[in-house]
Structures are given as structure tokens and as C-alpha cells.
Length: 233
Image 1 (spheres, helix red, strand yellow):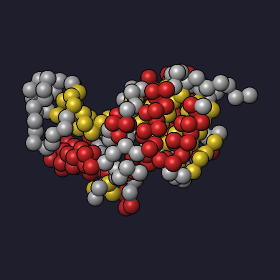
Image 2 (image 1 turned 180 degrees about the vertical axis):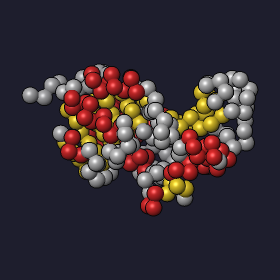
Image 3 (image 1 turned 90 degrees about the vertical axis):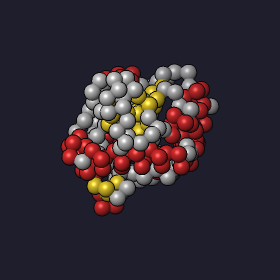
């Protein structure tokens, strides 16, 4: 017998933002906006060519101004505002579309384009200007800022909080994810271990599709609003 749903954990991936026009890094030929992932998304790449890496993220930050939340982002914000139980929206995306749609119970596990991390004083600060010009950290005044992005080989943010939420949730929902990037790809197994129901919404079955109790295939912008209305009835 399925248990009553009070606590929800939702994971979103690149698929939900792709419908708004945000490029995904799993593009053809292993290129991301024309660059190899190894050249722009690792600590080694930043050490080897910081100018290239900074310019790459500067361009992606600037592109955020040209894209907008879609119906899936808006529906999740509606659910966040109306849901009386615990809810945690965990996104792998570094864009700000969930924020702009109005989601509040939100965690960016892979960092944010609009945030900079100072390697000198360890402070985080909001950023909207290019980092390739070597601006000073607003806290320590040193030009030691890097994109506040979790690169390959680095630990995603707030994993303890995520694992606790997975252990306590009654429903785990994955939206627009490939199921190929860990640790996020393992969240469904963690949730099932603790007895949660699991739902996947994706264009195609993810690599972890067999772990979900239910899979709905299609565009997030069409599937998510329908599901949210079901939950709020």
C-alpha cells in the first residue's frame, strides 16, 4: 500500500531548461557551446587556461538575459508556494530560471552562474558582470574570483541536506535528467531505499529509468503542469 504523500523531493536537470533555450553540456560530439567539457568544466582546465574558462562562463551568464522560465519552471514554483508539507527542489542546473519563476525551497547542487567564489577568502557573492576582467572580491578586495560552479571532480553542494531530505521524502520526482551524472543519478535509489514513491518525467527514458515506479515521457513544459495540478487537487 502506497503511503500518503507529505514530503517531496524534486530533482531537475538540463532537460527542463533546454525547453527555454539553455544549451546542455551533453551535446553532439561531446561539445558544450563549441568547447570540450574537459576544457571548461574541470579545476585542471581553470588552472591551465583561466582566461578561456572565465570567458566561457561570462558568455553563458550573459545568455541568461535572453532566456525565460517555461511552464515547467512556473508549475514547480506554484507547487512550492502551495504545498503544505516539506518540499525540496534540487536542481543540477546553474541557470537562474527556477529562481526567476519564484521557487523558494530551492537548492543549486552544482552552483550558480550568477555567483562567484573567491579562492582567497572563500566567500561567495552575487555577480552579473564578467569575471574575465579580474574584478576584486567584494569581501577581501583580491582579484581571486572564479565561477561558483561545481566542476567535474568537485563535490556537489549541500549533499548532507539532500540525503536527509531523500531519507524523509514520500515522493521523489526526477525531471529532465539523463540519469548519467552522479551523485544525482543515485538519488532515485536512495529514495526507494527509504520507501518513497518515485516518478520520472523526461523526453526519453533516463539511464536509471528502471528504478522509477512510474515514467512519463514528453516535454517537461507539458508534463509538469499536469502533474502539479494532480498534486494540488
